[in-house]
Length: 370
Ligand code: NAD
Ligand code: DAU
Image 1 (spheres, rainbow, N blue to C red):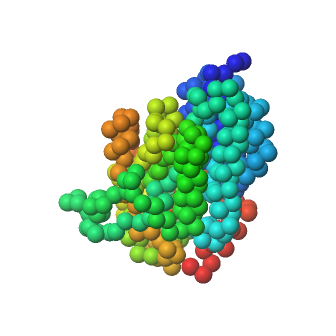
Image 2 (cartoon, protein in one colour):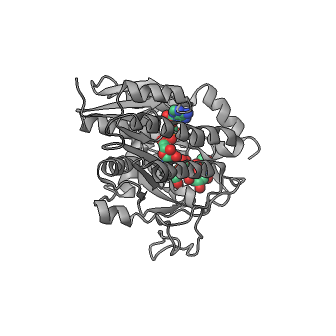
Image 3 (cartoon, rainbow, N blue to C red):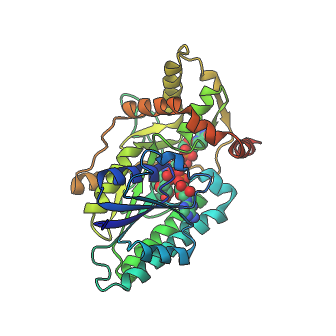
């Protein structure tokens, strides 16, 4: 079958990538979707069982740092679009092992960019109809202050008057965000130097099904289920801006098709929460759905040593995306968190397959000494 488009989605076996792959495979039967993933500890093909036999879906196990392989794939599949999500994504791991982050996030992105450049420049139409879309994070902008710790009249965010805009100067603090900033710079440099049609988006914290349980929300849901301690870093005062993952995937679809080349778009939910408040919501929701009495799991809250260099507050202004392309989150947080908790409780086998064995040993070692 001749496909209208051939799109590589990198990191498609991960959390956000699997939602993007699912959306594209189902919505665009005339596109061939090539999921390119190394299957690191964070990659899991079980995230995609519902679409794995679709005629427009191909899975390729490969490392984005393997430049020859990237070149071969560009040619084999006549690739005209790349949506690049593959990355090392966990801040705590980057503090322990920054080299892996520089390798995958910086060198891997460069290898993919160069393979796309050489292939697209070899074609008669060159960059016409091509697109390299790089998925980045709000963490590259640094951290905002918590000037309004009491929140609004309902005790909710925003927790300060300032936000991250597309024009905010980069100021990354963790090895993770530094590596993402480096990759963003390379993507923009390929546009400015070679004319490659690139787009970069910077998104806030995602939550929803299929997130690896080292991240706050799935980790805490699972720990509550097993009556394990809930390790709250520092005082739990840090603020994050949470977006339901399917809304991020919708934004990626829209921007891939309608975003302007060389532009940056911020994606966020205008939905700021202090960690300790979100932890209370999770406890309440899990206890209710498990049939426990209200407050049953509050005793699991355990304050531990803070994350090194822990960014205090992230808050994205996504008005450019709303005003120019008409995107808005479709789910309110209360609805999204209910769906999310239900999903993890209903998919315990998915969780148990990840948390048993090697990962369990890693997790225990991460928390030793905290
Ligand atoms: P994830 O850790 O769940 O998934 C990453 C995927 O990339 C995994 O499937 C992994 O196997 C794959 N991968 C890692 N190294 C690779 C390599 N060298 N070659 C090929 N594949 C490789 O990550 P996520 O949370 O889904 O994040 C996806 C992207 O979105 C990342 O670029 C991240 O920086 C960005 N992002 C994440 C969030 C968030 O809240 N999770 C928010 C904003 C931006
Ligand atoms: O802002 C976007 C970023 O969000 C993405 O770029 C990253 O890939 C993604 O991992 C996420 O980074 P965070 O560091 O914000 O997410 P994490 O789930 O690790 O932590 C959320 C907050 O909860 C943070 O303030 C640290 C805190 N935390 C986290 C864990 C895992 C705890 O207090 N205890 C924990 O055990």
